[in-house]
Image 1: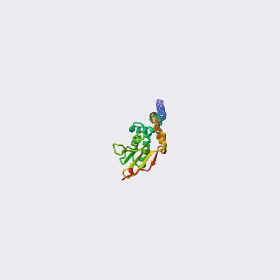
Image 2: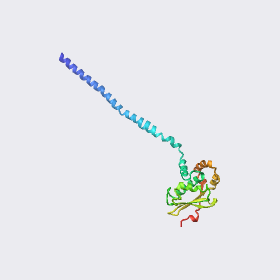
Image 3: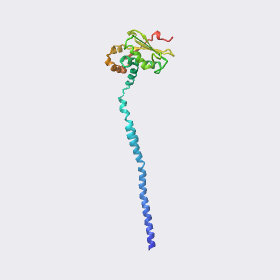
Image 4: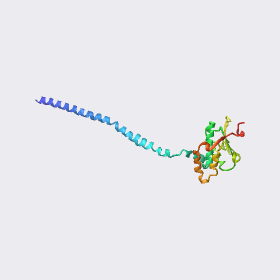
Length: 214
């Protein structure tokens, strides 16, 4: 009897351990299934969620749309001229147009700029705008001023290596609209000039023989 009891106890113990093992098996399986979810959720919250797209992704966007690209151009003009009034900005517009037509980069030493103007602020301001756009300067000996009448205000841009040249002057509409702008309105007027079509700011004219290559 004791022997039979012993055999029975061993069998019961064996069943109990197997049951416990079976019961533990799903628990461990479930545990292993859930374990990767923790890091994935954590990565989503901290990597792509809060810190990724939430914190870093959205921080620049408020400043992006609020920044007017014209501000950089106006600052470039002001850095050379001390302000960004309409005539200096017109010079900038002309200079940018000219180097694009000549296939030159800003700062190229292959460029020569000759500005014809009376010794009168507003007409002469165009030269500083040209310098801001092209990188030409008096110190580099590739920007020069030639005294002329008000009717003869124009700027010639020449590519020295090829002799190709383009001459631009303020359009009649520009002269009428922005002549003698009051000092307190120079800034807004300069910003306005950046938004106008080329034809409302300047026009291309025949390059004078004196500026032609020898």
